[in-house]
Length: 193
Image (cartoon, rainbow, N blue to C red):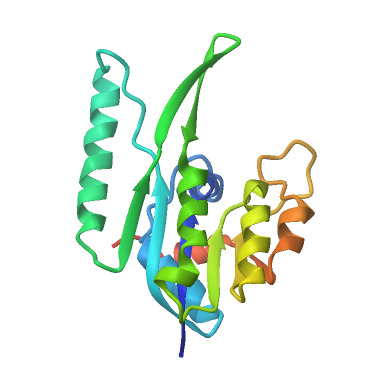
């Protein structure tokens, strides 16, 4: 079976998890999800690249922030033990918008681009990769690596609602070899045990 690499944008996937969970995050086994998505394409997942950012910590951190960071560290330490997974961490930025706190991952996209562009060098036998995201910032790199003979199979989620956080640009879809839509069943089949 042909091998592939799976690149998961955790920021996108966690929003989708919360949406499918009706406001509660669904706990999933990311490696199991990567293997399932690969198998659905008649591919074997050789490696998972998982992109995330640690929870925001103020100075000094609140009790809630400390609790979140401990949970995050426990998760990262557990998944880091698996040699089939590479964790890449950006940072979390807090922004005050009209009196409300918003949190955004920073630097994650650059890490994804860096790893995608290195595929032909580090994994010369890989000819197809799976990208789990909805971010159009990846369109240029997708075109570049497809010109190098690597096909990008996009896994995303789409809603036909104006101003939906799940509206995907056709530019992203058209940039990829093919695109597939994640479903709640994909999450249910990858539940963390």
